[in-house]
Amino acid sequence: MNHTNEFVRSKQPYDAIVVGAGASGLYALYHLQKRGYNAMLIEAGDGVAGTWYWNRYPGLRVDVESVEYSYAFDDDLQQEWEWSERYAAQPELERYFNHVADRFDLRPSILLSRRVTAAQFDEASGRWNVETDRGETFDAQYCIMATGLLSAPKDVNFPGLDEFKGVTAHTARWPEEGIDFAGKKVAVIGTGSSGIQVIPIVAETAEHLTVFQRTPAFAVPLRNCVPPEGYFEEVKANYAEWRRREKYASFGGWVAVNYKPVDLTTTSALAVSEEERLALYEDRWESGGLAFYNVYPDIFGDRAANDTLAEFLREKTRTRIDDPAIADILIPNDYPVMMRRLSAETNYYETFNRDNVTLVDVRATPIQSFTPIGLQTTEQEYDFDIAIFATGFDAMSGALVRIDIRGRDGQALTDHWSDEIRTTFGMMASGFPNMFYISGPGSPAPLFQPVLFCEDQMTWLTSLFSHMKTQGKTVVDPTPEFEETWIQECDRALDVTLFNETPSWYVGGNIEGKSGRGLIYFGGIHPYREWISKCASNDYAGFALQ
Image (cartoon, rainbow, N blue to C red; front, side):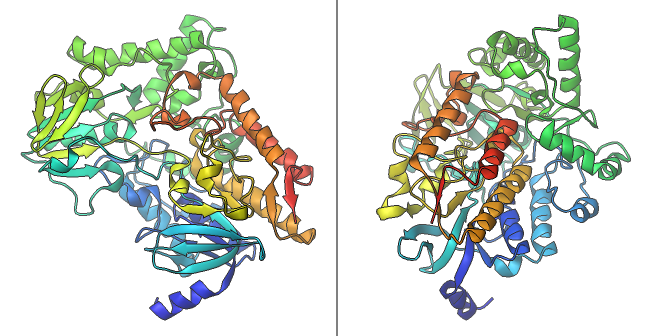
């Protein structure tokens, strides 16, 4: 595409601008164009795939089975794509989303290598002006933010970091040329999901690896492999039933356990015998991955029920670690299981049995500062050549507040969210008409498979657009009163769970000063669907149309 054509594009009006070319953004663009909307997608990266474009660190792969972590909207797509592993690695996932962009001829409507820096709602026209870092301004009736729930890396601001003479990298912004660890002393800071994946890979070739852990994680074996012969074909032959179960009979949008689809257990963990309970836990353990999410529902709200699973995982993990003192550091004992996202790993705990790996508990000996040759804790200085930051993300709202978004009367979104996140259904904020969030803050997105969730949300949104058209309306805005209703529902849903007992990214606990109120809807996908369906059937009561 030449510069002239790009300039012309920036001058024409659009029905919708989509921001972000990950799973949600690609589907949003497809879904809008399929229904006749003139839509354009803007992406900061040089390629599509979102998470699987930006994250490239060694060991990265999905923790939901490949056959489930994929679109359901087109059966021909489901049938033709061939996965090579049970859990696809980053390169294969990037290829998949590029295939989707090509298959549905989306590329002519995607502008790459331009970051959206600002968006301003124009009261007179009822439209959005969307600006990029190239000085372009795009005009659209609807602005759909598919910026990702884990796409804004947490700022790395350790004292003295600018004095460090070695190589630094963040797992979320891995250098394209890669990093050679052979013969090097390496530090990994952070043991969340990214750290848990990268640590075993680094340890294989590094001269020495030092892992700095603040909060231990519950982690379970991924058990990745090439599945048994015929498995992929069997899933494809029964995809309709798999998708039905994923959407309507699961906790998180995945149902595979030991290569078979299972429904969510509905009994209490405390209502069955210990023998029956342990048998279910063993089955999930042997299956691998995130199968533990499809166990007893009271795991998420009853501490006694939760303790049954937490203790099972502690015992299983302890058998994998040779040194009991190291096990005591690596195994969580002060928060409920799955209130931080359960991590799926390959040889993570065994890595700490290696002679070339050191574990540092920074809760016991906090990091004071970086030095020219490494970093200093309260106990000693550690030297290394390479520092890898697996320090996580400013989840849900982070990517949005890094854009200068201004709604009615020039109000900044950052001001609207200064004390707490306020949305309606996690899709809109009052005072910011015609702007929509896919997998946004205030939605259940972190608790449900995002590739499927975006299909639900876009179907609801285009139904809203059709309703507006029939009513002769061009602008929609949730009322402040209905937004407050949703915030109270988010509060209610959180209060009946154990999530608020753990300062995780789910509740903003990893970002200083960030409120967890309204950040995620913890009621689950099924009550969420009931809310949005009831709203639609009631002529979108709670939304002001003009």
